[in-house]
Image (spheres, rainbow, N blue to C red):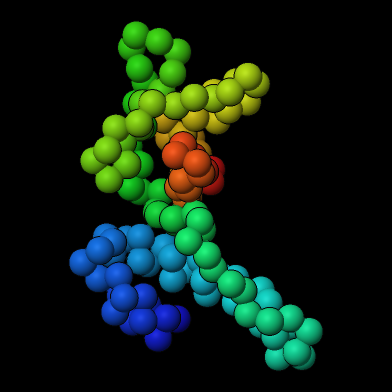
Length: 125
């Protein structure tokens, strides 16, 4: 785990915040530990990570708040403000975000992904 972090920080230090590097390290270690036995038996090769991989970050980096003017929520990630779009089925998503806002549930390590110029935030509650 320490070796992976040292390699990640060697490549990304100064380019990415250390919290992202740490979350990336945890994601890589978790993926390796789940497939470790299959790797050793030679039934599977190591995973290939491409440029469109989601960028992981810690749940403590997100600041949630209510938007007073509409029914949406506002969140701040790395000092960048975002507005939520919950899609057509808002019932369960709205309740989960309200529970996270109040502090009943905790936001865990989540990720952000850019697809065709659109930004997607994948929250793990």
